[in-house]
Image (cartoon, rainbow, N blue to C red):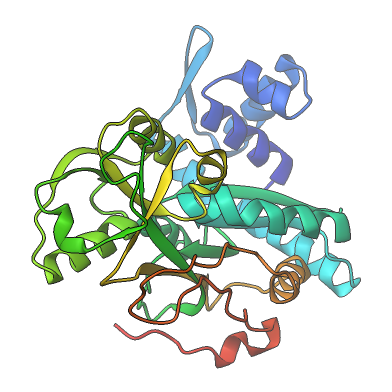
Length: 329
């Protein structure tokens, strides 16, 4: 099978356009069309339906598209493995991370990694924990960072970080002049929270339920930016990662509210499929993560039920991946 023809077919099918695929592959449109036609002639199958400038997969094309994706991915893995044998941390590093980690913690680490190993390229996926776990199980990434223990027999996982959640209000909110409140004071108060199904929301719901608190949730959103803007404008109170609101707290557009009877926190986990090839690029990522101090602000002084602070736990050396606890069902 001609891998180049397969690659052209895959890109055309993915883009649903010969023009877009040709541009992405740095080919002329006639050249892309010829490669796909040759592939169809070789196997005596019509793989694409053409309607004007748009194309769609035939039933035969859908079958080949699935296999083509896996074959091209395996070919790329092979190239990276061969680069590893030359001792070069090169190739593509595919990382899936949750919204908070991907937006606020991961960029600093990748910036440092790029300075050290400019030959590594990155493909970053951002989603919720369920999506990160799903992609890791499907081997669509080299490593994932999620906010819940996946507890799956095919995955290796290690807790790497604890993120503290704090209450925030706008300067005109009744709580704005107070440093701390008890959770029971949230009863009946308007709250703006992350969407149901997100890890922070699950932790918040659990702790409020444990304390018998029934707040009035006036808005739910997956967008922390939208939540912050609403709260800044005096619409309710939010409970967000302290890293997410760092700039707003420094500027004074938001005020932090601690809780006297609870510390609300959740954990991030580094996860990978145990059958995945551990490339030198991934080794370099994990090595630097062990060295790199992703600095989160320490918890401010105030009434606390236990020791405060968000700390980055040690990420295991690649050589001990196999020794990590394999999660059971």
